[in-house]
Length: 250
Length: 189
Image 1 (cartoon, each protein chain N blue to C red):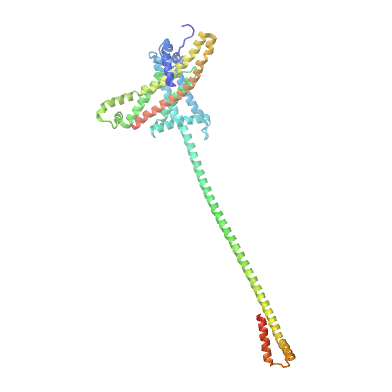
Image 2 (cartoon, each protein chain N blue to C red):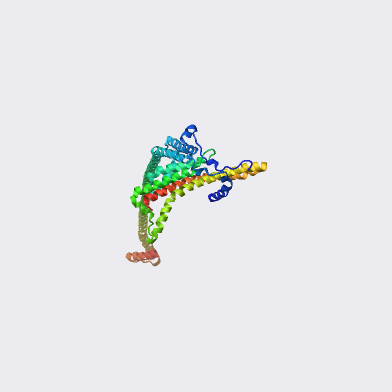
């Protein structure tokens, strides 16, 4: 193929970041983005907490809105016990949200598009909520896999189904986030690549025709902004749901 | 839209993207793929500790503080409103009692004035009646006096006329009686 080609997946390849130190410690470019996300969150809190005003300024209002949003999500979904898990859910939510958002900027790495990252997060949520279930109910938590009000002869069929659906939670949780972020970024890259291919192949007419993929990318940018917020919310609310199951067993 | 973009991706990926090679996300032979997870664990633990120990409790305190202040102000406003309501009720009661008092005063004044006027009118008419009666009595007395004075003159004139006409004079008592009868008849007529 002559001229430029579309390398839609190159944006996901891992390199080391932070110069020689990163090379020595295997600190990757995705870790750079994670660090940036964490630093942005902490800086937002630092600015928002500077005044502690009765009538908040912009940054304080932003931090308060985030706090109340996640806090309400925890209490509404898990119940009063949700307050104990609130810092954890907030950390996960803000980390994924900031990761999704800064991944939308050029030259920033979208670490939530890596299945290893999302699977690690999902496995942590899975193991943690299962641990909470056993911690709260002891071995009685195993009754969670026995659906209520079902005739006994169906149980040998239903219990394996329940267990399989429970075990598939981390898979669906991680693949949902990973696939959404990957798909969006690949689409972007592909349409941008179309613009180069059109210009290289058709000259001036191709450059004018490139306005179509450019417009599509503008629309995609809006969609990706929505997806970035939505997927972070979905991850957090499912975390809350799993914790609810662990605490209440139904 | 998401489903559409996913479908588009599925249509495009085999022809365009995967033509260049495998997805870096699936390349688990690259040590960086798993090493990023360890570093993420470090970053997340630090972030969790910072948020849970430092950031979130302070935001929670700010929000609690604001809720408390709002609740306090609302309670104060409610108390002030009750106070105002009470004052308004007091004002209304005072106003209505004052109005009732004033109406009673006015009614009493009107009644007094009416009674006064009636008494004065009665006194006046009594005085007038008395004067009238007195006048009538005086008139009667004058008339009676006049009548009494006319009787001897009339009987004398009648005696003279009878003397001239007949030449004889009846007894004095009879003459007086006839004259009285005639006067009575005249008076009755």
